[in-house]
Image (cartoon, rainbow, N blue to C red; front, side, top):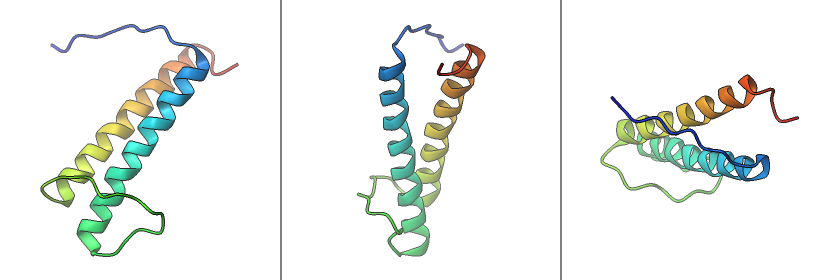
Length: 81
């Protein structure tokens, strides 16, 4: 079973953490799109290193799931206010 951590972090730092995770997710999603279509997405990005579009998509989904878990916990604790 995976070990679960309970971490205390200030709201500002948590916002920065979420921003970083969102950027990573977008990078992987854009990489998957590029590998599938051969065309650059509308936003500039640097392609991630991976074996194929499916791997990039899977990693992007994993980042999105982390963001959603964190956002869910924020809401459970009364939101940002």
